[in-house]
Length: 286
Length: 286
Figure: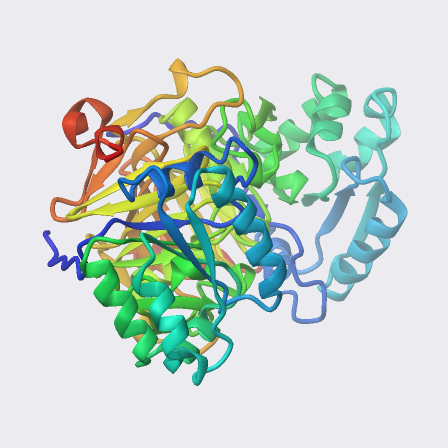
């Protein structure tokens, strides 16, 4: 079954599973910078999700500087009034790379939703800027986002908490820290609630590039795809909250760097098949 | 694809995912007792896996007594010489229910493997006694058992540690505490190493009855089945230890009480289809 996938934006969109390497190696962040097509891009770091924005910003300032950024901008939005602040909007308007840190995705949507800042971010993305986020900054990218629910309680109706995300990518629901926090059961539950959406479970130090109708995996970690589109049965709609969910015939894929996935065809794409569409040729410095 | 499944024993075989309820409710242990077909069975508790056998035995003595056991036998085997002790062997020979506690499955196979005690246990099982185990006592039941490997390291070649188990059930590989410890990636790796074996991931306070070619789920928790028999690709044999494993087109099912699975047909059996083969009619007191 094909699904309708709308890629709502034009610049590269990258979701990272959290805890990405920030040493000189920095395999994932190096590529985030390279996707800008510039050797010395301006990077804007949004720390809204974090409870410790200074510490988080300092870490990214160091790593992005090491990776050649011309400037690393501290786009510190802590409230909805900040999200209407022309100075902060002006920062995002000149960023080549917009990086959204981890923390709490509900802070991101609550503070940035329907704001002039988000409008400016979308416009900058449409102009071709890279948008990348890690952990909460990745989870917020789907139209419906997962924001809570202990993995140990999942597959109990209502355990996984969902809300509306920013919708930078449609047709998928993103989860992060996926292998490390054992969140498979979260995306099994999510898939039962609406099989149309592909679950994208990103491990730590792993990432995906959403590239049109393709997902390309990169980084040292794993990306787990949970395809519920052909499930044959689930009792989820018959249950009261807290009751145990059954779901049958879910398909899963564990991807590593070099592999991709066709959202329109719902199948894995190997390195040979990807060929010229694989990740590396997309990274060309201007 | 059908697989050859040999059920190596004749009495009921029950695998429990750990942390089963031991209160008066005791949904799973109540059934373990009932499977004996006796209102007041003799229960032998094997605490070999545990580092705290007295505490573990005391807990099971209380719950099995509450559930009507005529006797609860402390089959305390701590060494290979114990496993040749005629007094302990005589205990197992009169047990209607043989219950294997949790702990370290490697202690179980190391101490009981090739012992006169294990021979007597197999014989008693062949005569119709119930064999049930929880956690390590469940993991040891498959021909190849998983005994280690942090879930966070899994899907790296060699991360999941396997060894030969007791082989009470063939065609499957059992893992426990499955949802609670996020062990999906362990069985994804196991499935890549040999797709012929169905991964049976049992959550806490969940259980399966191996009933001929069928698996029947029961208890309040979930049973996750990982069917790798139709995987289309994995790189696992090309890798060095520690490198990231990819695997495509794994099928998963989340079962709850009332649902079963056909090992020969590799498909879920619903409550309607199971009908007279479902769990309840199997519990008839003599």
